[in-house]
Amino acid sequence: MDKVNALIKDMEMKMAQEKIDCPCNLDELKVGVDLGTSNIVIIVLDKDNNPVTGAIESANVVKDGIVVDFIGAINILKRLKQQVEAKLGIELYEAATAIPPGIMSGNIKVISNVVEGAGFKVTKVVDEPEAAASVLNIQEGAVVDIGGGTTGISVMNNGKVAYSVDEATGGTHLTLVVAGNMNLPFTEAEGFKKSKENEKLILPIVRPVIEKMAHITMSNIPKEIKELYLVGGTSCLTGIEQVFEKYTSLRTIKPENPLLVTPIGIAMYAG
Ligand SMILES: Nc1ncnc2c1ncn2[C@@H]1O[C@H](COP(=O)(O)OP(=O)(O)OP(=O)(O)O)[C@@H](O)[C@H]1O
Ligand SMILES: [Mg+2]
Image (cartoon, rainbow, N blue to C red; front, side, top):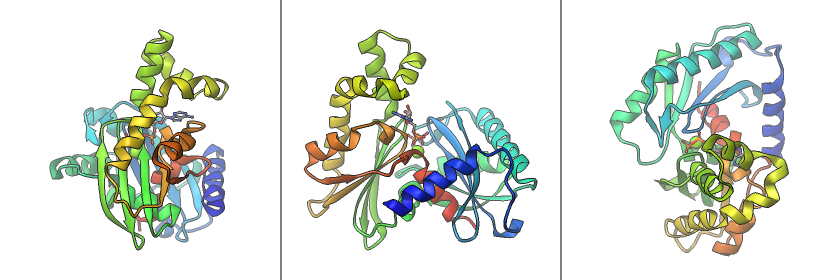
């Protein structure tokens, strides 16, 4: 996991920089677009999958893999594209994007249309779990991507995704529980949940929902699975891996910043 953590740290650092001296020519850049329920992310890698730059914006334009605000999604993505292009001093033309498990073909087209609407030619549509697994570089085990709206569970076999499912429980449900418990409006509860200083307070409040996620995971993986890998923004929650480990009795591993794993993986499939 050290290599993965170093890769993500490097990407976070480059995303925070205002200007990037692009080390390679345009044809060699790999661009990935992740249209999530909570965040829209653009990631740029070089041809050897080293971080170049990226940009992220929180958004409410996609619900569980379905684009609910087509124009809004295009506008956010256009904005992110311009930000990244300004940092690099070049224009980007092509990108890979991704779909959650089990999505219907009509919705795949809509996701591609958003990415094309923002000015990219879509070169590849990859499965989100496959993207995450590429970054983690794992052969066996299950990848659990806990995003805003859903939890995607993918079983790996010989480095390939054997099968995946997407279940409608994610970070939004944790926020709703925090909102109810603390008597806060949703947006305040979202901020409260993510704040580092509240981390000790949050876990006991949301533990039943995390146990439910662990339960859903167990009911979707075969007995042979020995390890779980947690990715997605909700996996940022301090202690979530211990709750999973206790509930499932499976070794549970997560990178230091699980939020960027899937978006980085999508970019790896570009080019
Ligand atoms: N530090 C944090 N602590 C707890 N939760 C966090 C933290 N950072 C982000 N999250 C949660 O992660 C979720 C967003 O994660 P992510 O960006 O992976 O989702 P997404 O890809 O947009 O959604 P989906 O995959 O469900 O479509 C939100 O619910 C957000 O509240
Ligand atoms: Mg996601």
